[in-house]
Amino acid sequence: MAHKEDVMRVMYERSCGLDIHKSSIAACALITEKGKPQEETRRFGTMTEDLRELAGWLQQKGIRHVAMESTGVYWKPVWNILEPAGFELLLANAQEVKIVPGRKTDQKDSQWIADLHKHGLLRKSFVPPRAIRDLRDLTRTRAILTQEHTSVCNRIQKVLEDANIKLGSVASDVFGVSGRAILRALMKEEKDPEVLAELSKGTLRKKIPQLRRALEGQVTAHHRSLLTGHWNRMEFLERQIADFETQIAQRMKPTPEEMALTTQNAAEESPLSLSPREEAIQLWMEIPGVGWTAACSMVAELGVNIDQFPSAAHLASWAGLCPGNNESAGKRLSGKTRKGNVWLRRTMCEVAWAASHTKDSYFAAQFRRIASRRGNKRALVALAHSILVTAYHMLKHKRHYMELGGHFFDVINSDKVRNRLVQRLTKLGFEVKLTPMGAVDNVTSATN
Image 1 (cartoon, rainbow, N blue to C red):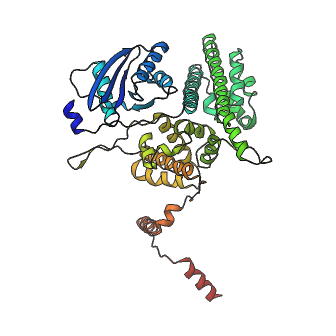
Image 2: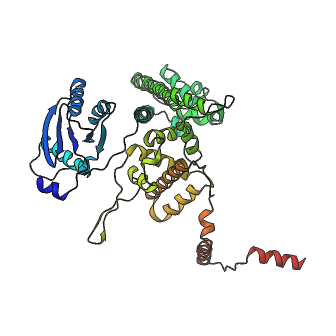
């Protein structure tokens, strides 16, 4: 330890490292007084009373800088207790804190974390404020419920196929207004295909003859029992999703503190301004493919203060939307993307897929350009990266989205596009002669 103190600079004279588990916490306090290092280790429980005892012990030791490892969700209650107490907390990536293989105990892990933190060798993970963390819980739970809803809908269609009800082969949306009316009738023991087909509405009524054939199945009491159970589960999930969306929308509105601050700074007759979260949502919804749900998820994952990311490249790396660095002996090895923030990554990929189908847009052109060479999956990740970088600069500089158009790449690479099209026509057996538009107009005017 003495040799290390001579070599490495001490960043914090009083620091602590925590190795957190489900039912116990190993704490190691490192204190340097008059150039002499002191070390003290203790073990605490994870109940609220134990965490308060940990906070009191740290205050007694005069320690303000505390580092911990991001182990599952076990670090969250510790953070929630220590953060209001005024400690400067650091959450470290578990991959970067991994101790050298050898004798491994909880106390040694806490000593290792404390030693790294003492010398400033740990990078701080992004932990948003409590309000944004609560919003994260809502948006992530809503995403999980949406997945469950999709699974239940798939189970209903599986039961229909087992009963030889081919509703999905005729109706584009089995769970639209017409599909739901037909499913309710099936659960009420209605078997007549003509009666069931007459329940269709809107454009689906043009397919009544096909519906009659599709609804002529063999629905048994067993099938109706399964349909009823899945249907009740589906409606329950829909009510839950709607409730979470209401809560998310409420969290986006200005808080009493924000409204009070706005009222002080604004004129009496001026309209109430939007909250920082609503401003971010309105900006990001200008991007093709970004809807209200995706924008709320982006706010929950990134927050509204984008300054914690020094650059757009840092944000893309944090989200896991850029190639990984793996180089040895001058050779570039696998560039597989890192795990990153899986929730933000999934949201951006969903946005990218929607943007790739937006007509006459820059992102759709970028997707086609990359997909033709690298495939759809790589193009989707590249498009998600571009959208995230765009969102970063829009929020950082408070700029509106500017659409470059679907012909952007054709304009900047006009010579390559021309040569490629000429080659394709030549291979098809055509003789191509190109004449600029201005020359054609001049020839026409001279002829007239």
